[in-house]
Amino acid sequence: MPLSTRGLFALTWLETKIFLREPLGAIGSMVVPVLAFLVLGRALPRTVPLTATPYAGLLAPGGVPVLVSILIANSAVLSLVAIISIYREGGILKRLRATPLRPPTILTAHVLVKLLLTAVTMALMTLVGRRYFSPGVDVPVISFAIALLIGTWSILSIGFVIASIVPTARFAQPIGAFILYPMIGLSGLFAPLSAFPPALRTVARLLPMTYVVSLLGGIWRGEGWLAHLGDIGALVVAFVVCTALSSRVFRWE
Amino acid sequence: MAATCGRSVIHVEHIRKSYGTLRAVDEISLDVYEGEIFGLIGPNGAGKTTTMECVEGIRTPDSGTITVLGLDPFRDVYQLQERIGVQLQQAQLQKRIKVWEAVHLWASLYKRKTASGEQLLEQLGLADKRDAWFMTLSGGQKQRLFIALALINDPEVVFLDELTTGLDPQARRAIWDLVRGIRDRGKTVFMTTHLMEEAERLCDRVAIIERGRIIDVDTPERLVVKNCPQRTVVLATDDSGAAEAFGRIPRLDSVTRADARFMLHGSGEEFVTDVIQCLSDNHVRVTDFRTVLPTLEDVFLKLTGHSIRE
Picture 1 (spheres, each protein chain N blue to C red):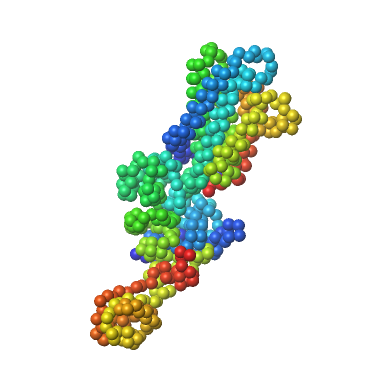
Picture 2 (cartoon, rainbow over the protein chains, first blue to last red):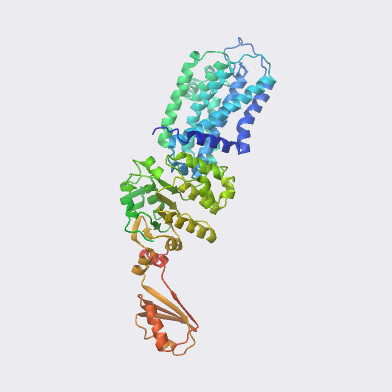
């Protein structure tokens, strides 16, 4: 079914406003990651020599920003899962469908809202970072933000698969967290993939979060996009597979 | 009133729809004509909503054909959505969407020239609620908003599914007036209800549906005449010879008596006249007199063997 832009921007703007009207959701998804950034950033030493180890997880340069970025992407996905399941349970999705709106348009609007939210949180994080951490750290902020949006966009497609399988809105957050947090644990952020047993390493290589971490970390350290084409390719594949899967199993009511 | 000779705008032929082993719709055929209020009536779970959602194009029947305004609801769903207005059973909107935002969003979705949203809110008595969040509206206000959304594209056919369920009698009456107003503007209304009174007062024609099948279709009046010829006269008299006189009324089926109150059961249109004739011939003085006519409720009981509430 073709994606129609009619109503897409109206719906995206409206859903953004509606999201901001729920203070807890808005604060939870934007302020909490920024605070985490602040606290973790101050608690961990910031000057680990690059040469100490090729991989140092959280202690590597950019470790904390990458973790916080992952948390931002994560909360966007969990929020998407919650909203979709609440909308389904309340019959809102069905009501929107009984209009000339095409189903992909409805879902795309939600993706855009989440990407917008991710970008704003990222901007907040950058501002806070500038204020509280050593100035002059030369980080490609724009590239990093783009990398984060690519990662979030890919992970959101997993959100749709999760949103397709959760039975009721009550289970949306727990099931979402149950799927997403282990993916973060295995992403190589806390321990390098090379330290994993082979089976676990294979699992980690199949999970898109691993590629998000690799992409974000690389861009933060100033590596070029070309060096991370593999990561981007993996994220595109994850998006295509998850979108195809959710278009088969997605339930509107 | 009943425009039974008008153009058929909805044509349904032999549709079936099953959910697992449950046959929700079993060989339903019907026609809805331009400018009428057509009601599908039956108990919950009879297949009303499934039938209606198939016609709206948001559900696909397993077999059978449907034409709405000359369009196929599945193949031409977006073309059809442009020309129809839909109110779904138990629908919700985003909790924190404002009334005017919903109306504006809906208005932006249609290609055809839309009705004025502000004017609709005015007409539906929602003008002072235009800045209110959906979650703060009362049940009646929510339903009126859904009617506004169903009318925003100035549709040719309006679908209303269990429109007044859960509303208090006053709100219900207000909604009935609105629905009559829709028809008076030349639109066709296809509605479902499990409230017999609602069907009787609102619908030009009704189809009685049970267990996925249509049992009968006609105007409410004709359904009553056809299926329930019984008439009951309730009267009160202290005339001691009355009981004997009543025994001579032709077409009388039975009499029940409680002190001075009599209930005379008979059948046929003539029965009430016969009773009056009898009272007059025998100079029976009555202190109360009324007739009880069968309703759609009785028709339903007669046709299905059980009450719609069971």
